[in-house]
Length: 398
Image 1: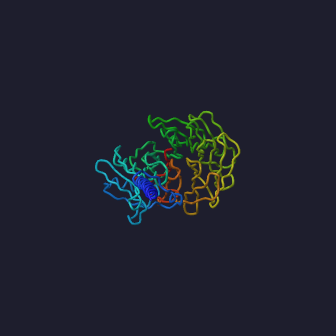
Image 2: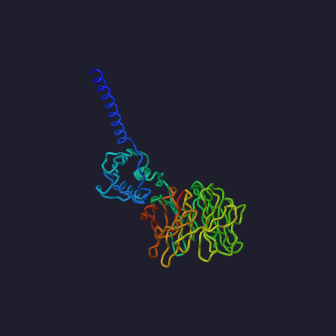
Image 3: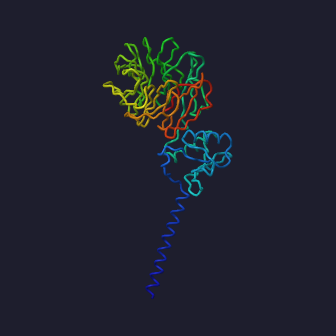
């Protein structure tokens, strides 16, 4: 009897220890910052999210815009999968939970910067949990704003169009805008001397230097990932072909030599290849070529009749481009190796964000062109309403 009693007490003790361990594990899971099951992200469905608390109007507006750009649907609480509990007096505090509020993914206070900066940081943390990707909300965009039918100027702004600053005052036509190394410069084609020439624009010093000003066309500059080379389109030797030079225009090498027109070169993230459009087969199609020269290879774009303005995603997996229909331009993506095209939205001139998930592009509406953000997996589009004027040719900092 004594042995049985001892065994019962031992069993009870073990059971108590196991229960305590289980309860502690459950408590830790509901109070610590947790990773999330990102099945919804992989299924290309928007994230249903509801914002609770007492955020001031500016902070709430910023948070909603950022989350919608990132692929979220702002919904009523009873329809939400995730809840954002946020408030701000002096600083913003925010936490992300499941719909019941019992599972918490993070709980943080934001003390640095303006209210807008803190709201951007909160949105970035939310989307980091939901998608696993770093924030893009501290990035900038460059774009052109029309001043007349055949003239435009360059502006730089926060990704959402705020804090816009005019960069040029040339009173001429600008094409082929792109960021330079470390986002400290811009490269573009300008007609300010009555010829389409390519310029390097040092933003800190406000100084410009010529990269290419040959007779004929000099356009579509694209800087290599290491910041040391520039691909461009020149027609100095006949039809427009792809060339590569050093950043100052020296050591110029002709990469393609065809009887057709080439346009819009973009570098692969590892710097080994260039993708561009060419009319070798009649209509504009996408091709790749080694960055040092060699055999051109066509990229299959099944499902569309033309392909222009390619932009290679920073992760190397996809190429965004513009296709033309009878009535409009369409933004598309295709695997970098080629294949079936996915048509995303009406627009032109796509540019990838550093997260390889978000695109910015321009969309015409009547005589005006607006800038649009697109979350590629969910196809959720958001117009950048704060950009004034007729804006085009947006490009994202790398």
